[in-house]
Image (cartoon, rainbow, N blue to C red):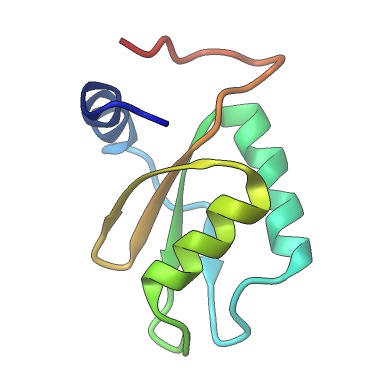
Length: 96
């Protein structure tokens, strides 16, 4: 689990990032989860955008992504989900 201080640090780091995934009307699927796992391994911190045509609640989408990818939920702001997972090979972020 992330502490409040670590989440604040990650929110600051994620501020300038653009969402690299979009969840649409099909919701979350296995393929998307695998791609998000790969992206988290490369970048550690990503944003996922939830489109207007997504029928699922943003909190349930976030929960599915966190469980599927084994990531930590940093923040849900508007229709953007910020996810973090410590990389095993490409560690770039040093948490406080």
